[in-house]
Image (cartoon, rainbow, N blue to C red):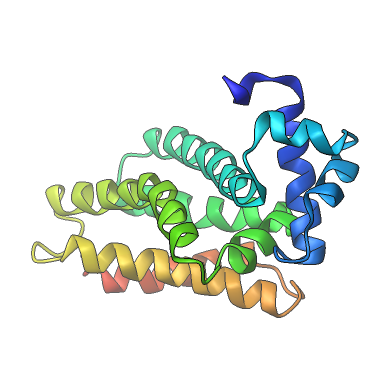
Amino acid sequence: MKRNKPKYKQIIDAAVIVIAENGYHQSQVSKIAKQAGVADGTIYLYFDNKEDILISVFREKMGMFVEKIEEMIAEKNTAAEKLYVMVERHFQILSADHHLATVTQLELRQSNKELRHKINEVLKEYLHLIDKILEYGKENNEFAADLDIRLGRQMIFGTMDETATSWVMNEQKYDLVALAPAVFHLMLSGCGSK
């Protein structure tokens, strides 16, 4: 499998930097290769094209992200604790890697319909995690019995996403992680927390 080849992660990490600094459209494969310290042709042993690199970046980073959050929320007993961990971790991961934050919040918003579809496929796993927290909260009477899971998910993901995007657009001038408690409390109210 491509993912286990030694240069795969090197290329993924280089792509995050190049795309963040130059924008997706200005990021030639040759720039990514140079940043990764590999020959241009080496890129094509791992990826079909630049679009494949962008999707792979998102798939890899989102996969790690979901894995870390799942481990952390498994240790929590209440839906509220699980939700707080998700919000805080979401902001911590983006805060710790400014290049990744720029790529996920700006460069992945491509107008290309096929690209958007592939990104949405990758995002489903993360959205499913939000659904599980909301369902758990309803089952344990922490959240309103009539909470619409789909709307709740949109509110939670949309709030985290917009908060992170604003932070990136404001050139990351303030502490994103410090916003986690306020964002979390707004979400709890929206879920009809008891």
